Image (cartoon, rainbow, N blue to C red; front, side):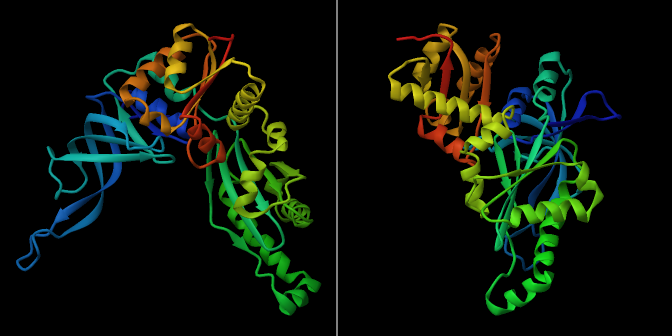
Length: 358
């Protein structure tokens, strides 16, 4: 979660959620009566003489909203904040109107509270991701690039080499074609090169990954100081390569201290115990509640499937209670990775326990 305290008011903090855990923390911080300033859109009804009364123009506008309701919008990937407009930068939108704002990963809002408690500040600043990973899944024909923060994977459009037939073979001899392909990949990576804590991991079948790594280091000085890593053993490229990598032993080794590696290890541990007939885990709301009553939870993972099993307010209350206990770690996942879908298939919530329970 990116945060920035504004100079004009100590009560206003600019917040940018970067992963599902950030949205959950934001959901727990926002209260009824707070104000949120954000860019949004709203339909302005046409008042021309011959215009149809049900038609309108959707415009972009920045508003200050007094919050009356806060909830997830049927998924943990989108937070819905509703309330009354206090001010706007468009005179066509008067104050007092009811409006809703959707807050997604990478959206920036300004949250104004009458008082920021230490607990609230810890929730929004304690989830800062130390490292962000850029995954490059490539071969000689196509390359996919994705940004991994926490357990959220954001994929950008594929880059193609245009490799085909005799024309490609002719170009390949003077390397003009392959250099053009590598340059296009580098241009996509340049978006991230100024970010602090970025690690670039390159994988895929064949030798293209190794050639590109050398090209990247030789082409630009700034990439020599980046944490660049080549990974072997991933024989799939493109978007499918991401899902193979994220389930591989290589991922757990390279990203050992990352959230996604921790969540993957928890899932694997649960599945191992199921196969062995052991019971130091809990699956589903009822088992989680019981384990929590015994202070048995060590690590817990959940997805948006949990909202099909219990009301959102009840889950937030239970989550706060679980996290109030010492040394309990919780992780939110979304559908951007195979890991999130695996959690959903297990009822949307699982936990590893400190001791076996019946």
